[in-house]
Structures are given as structure tokens and as C-alpha cells.
Length: 319
Ligand code: DGY
Image (cartoon, rainbow, N blue to C red):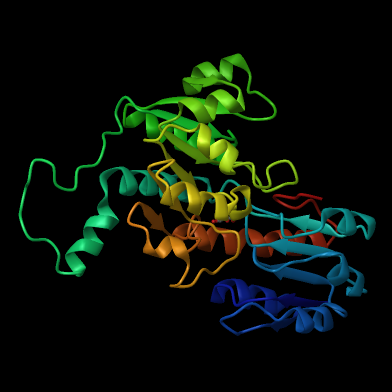
């Protein structure tokens, strides 16, 4: 069988694949160009892809033999599920193993923004740290006693809540399907409407997948309902936020700040308007990016592919 990797994975994963299959690897640092993907996917049985590879109807139609897609990510909004379903293509993904890493980053971004860590780092590097310990210099805000508003309460959301409890925060959440009361009690969280969530949160953190329903759910209208002191954290998907609206809200101090690991169009460059804003912390889509987590993801991505190609149940499957 022949498989296609749209980017290099860990050596152990590639060796494992090469023992079993003929492997085509795109070794470039930038994503495989769409034209090349259309051409290469034509004759492969399996595909390993990444969140930035857009596997849409046209790509899937050109895949004459494809039986399995294994994505190196928990998100699968880059794959057209309907077209894959029609062609009986199985899809594997990597949830659970990246829960803690992504929750850690979410809390890291929250701490960074609330205590102005990166802002202070920028100031020192610019040679602007002149006086020490001024009573009102570089003051941030405490996490203790603040309300964490969670849009979404899946695995990553719940891991964030556990961490936030350690900081003395209280959590409200909104999600399409409410958790059971027992589950809510165990996590110490309160279910509220979307409108109450955005109005009452000190920190609004996004943990929903990007779908038609969540596309631009955070827009000028919702941002204007937030507290002026509130901050927004996004480690989910960029397109959940209308970025133009967020930039406007940050410039006009409609909200106090934002910390983002994901963007509408990635990568963003140094001329992106948010790179000029002190009340914004930017990360280059590193939610799952710890050495341990990335290795586990590589292992599961390969296992999903192999199991799927051999007609067995994948460890984690979408289809
Ligand atoms: C994923 O795996 O989908 C996430 O974006 C990781 O950061």
C-alpha cells in the first residue's frame, strides 16, 4: 500500500510507516501546495495530514484509492466529512493525548495576559525599564475571585477548569448540550446562557470546534456585551472569532485584552495589526506543542492509519 504524509513526522513514526508501506513525504517547511496534493493523493491508500491541509471535496474527488485519513490533530474542521463519508473514507484523529498540553497553554496565556508577563518582557527588551517597583507600574490583575467563562466544556475545557480552580477562580460555562448535574457539581461549574456568559465573564475562554454554528460567534455584537475589563483567550480555532471585530474592540478598549494561539488565517506575519497591540499576547498555534504530547500524537496518528487500512477499529475515529 502507498501512503502520503503532507509533512515530516517524528523519525520513529516514519520508520514504522516505511516498514509497512511505500511512503511519500512532503519535506518542505511550508504546507504541501494544493496542486501537488491533488496530484499525489490520486494514487495513495492512506493520508496523514495536519490542521492546515484543507482536505475538501475537490481533493477527495481526486483521491481514487484513498481509504483512510489520519490527521495529526484533535480538530478535524479542515476535512470535508460529507465528501469523505460518501466515499467511505475513514478518518482518525488525536484527542485526549493533547488535552493537558492545550489546557496548560490556555492557563499560561491567561496568566501571561493578566500579569502582563510578555508585555514586561517586550518593555525590557526595548530598554524601557527605567524605575523599579513603582506602586502602579505594570500592575495586572489577580486570578483569584475572577469568573472564568468557558464557551465549550469538552475534554480540554474540563482540564482548564481543574487548573483554574487551583487559582481560586469560579467557572461558568455554555455549551450546546449541557453536562449532567452530577458532572457539573464534580467540576464545580455553573451552566449559563451564551448571553450571560459573555456579559459576566472576567476571562472568556473558547473551547468549541469550528463549525457553521460557531463561525464568528465572537463578533462585535458579542464583544460589545463583554465587560470592559474582560479578556478573551482562544486556543481552539481562529475562525470562531471575527478577527476584524476583535481588532476593533481591542483598539477601542471595548475589552481589556486577548491572548490567542489560533488565527483566522495562519501563520500571521509581523505586520498583522495585533502585533502592534500591548494588550495582546500571541502564540504560534502551539496548544499541543510539548515534546511528550507531540510524540504521543505521532504514535496515535500512525496507529490510526495502520488500523484503518487493515480494516480494524481505530484508537480515535471521527468516521
Ligand atoms: C489540534 O490538534 O487540532 C490543535 O489545534 C492543537 O493545538
